Image 1 (cartoon, helix red, strand yellow):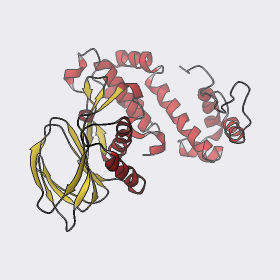
Image 2 (image 1 turned 120 degrees about the vertical axis):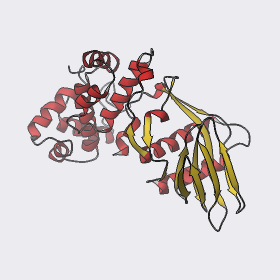
Image 3 (image 1 turned 90 degrees about the vertical axis):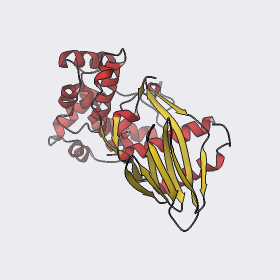
Image 4 (image 1 turned 180 degrees about the horizontal axis):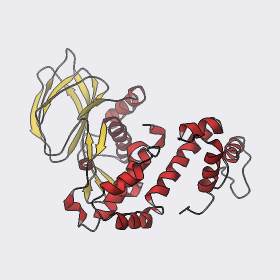
Length: 305
């Protein structure tokens, strides 16, 4: 999964998520005698900076080393202990992450409980800074934004699959919106899967025609057209990164370059070659009239149905 594309959360609007840090950050500094046996009413993300810790969570055994992180879900009983020859340090942050203010987003996912950050060389200085600036008894705006970044990195590495939408949510006022956001997120994460649009409709606990109508009303496209647009967005990133039109066509699943070019123009409003030229001119400071900031807003055409 390409993190540049936004990954598993890319289909969820920013204003649909609410992150709450429910207490000040725990600056872990555990000696060899440290041991804990407890449960939390909210989620807890634990990240190891030095040393190591051992945990038992819901019957599973885990060992954290520098660069490892573990999510302890809300309500889980866990035991932790020192598990190395040096001080076990890191951060532990209690939080909630709600979708539409009603649904626990973490509960919608199947994830690996503990993972090693795939981009730890990038994350380590961020986590250390997060640790160092944490006030003793409060949270701050910068912590909120830094933790969202860290949490997204964890979820990208730990994600296995989306859970089926719970039946209890179907009858709720926000149930259909939850289903549509999860479907859009699945499409955004893997737009090259030929069957993904049909599969998300089939998996939704709603009448297929009703679900597709609501998807179009809320997202602006049918699931299939939304998938096509997300494929073209991926092509835009590839073209802007220097790939040729032929290379880009192949990377987004088109054997016929000319057909890819027609589809790209249909959805984006300009040809792949025209888009590459616009990117290059923007980089050179040749801004189009009325676009003094150098950013053209795509697509240039109305949404295709």
